Image 1: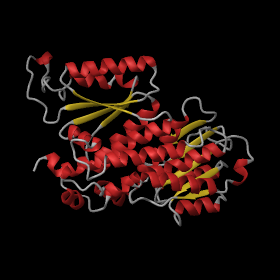
Image 2 (image 1 turned 90 degrees about the vertical axis):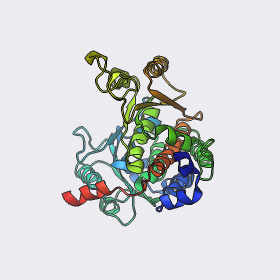
Image 3 (image 1 turned 60 degrees about the vertical axis):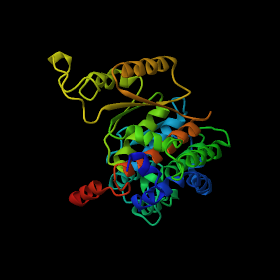
Image 4 (image 1 turned 45 degrees about the vertical axis):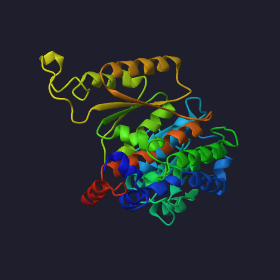
Length: 374
């Protein structure tokens, strides 16, 4: 059975995805709508009367941690308050009582997130918790008399991105940190629904954009570049989803920085036609078992010079035999464009796992690591 035939066999898709990761991805639009309601109903107490925070520091790890990166990207460089994502055990030294700390953990048990949240309370920082109800994080927020937004997991933290991210945006909006059109969340939900329809399991591989993307990536080493801070977050999300869903290696970057380092891999041993030795050694060597593939995530709000860099980078890759995939975010609003890319990414990485005969749900290495350090 070919890879394409595997993706078009509905019985095989159901068998290969016993935990229902595809159904979890399909829940994204519902997550947005539920999260908007829950965050809008959350009592923010004195935070609404206080001055706008100097900075919003979002602490979280893994699938939960991407929520902070997403908030920073949607807020953009012109945001009234600095937005910083922390993926660590330590709160930055400059963070103090003038800064809001939002702790995000889908389970509510993440030890790094709990460590940073506890430190924030000791420093007298305003705190908001977002995550699993009846968890250590919820208890910590209760003890600190801090607001808490309960999130119901879609199944896996990495499948609950919208349930974890949207509350941060609603909170930032309520505190006057960002402004956006009232219909932004519904437009994002509609885009998630549109992509879910296009990428649904019973859509054949020759017209299904997520299945097409999975087949393009199969057997390659993906190097994924965003062309703006917004699509840079999507590129990072793509690499993480390849790691967790497909158990697959990937490199992510963002232009223009990637043009100062990662672009050199076009002349390395993973570039088709370059081989293991390279021309400097007078021996092309064997073709790489897994050739490099450049994936470019385009944004309509690219800097003009970044757009030029993107065009030339694609030319350089093509001239060296490196396969190229270009994907463009759809929609006028940042959240819409992010939704269109992330939903495609999430479906494609589950399909790639199935192509390779891998169950996309388990993360056994993470579980074993946690057990060993406990």
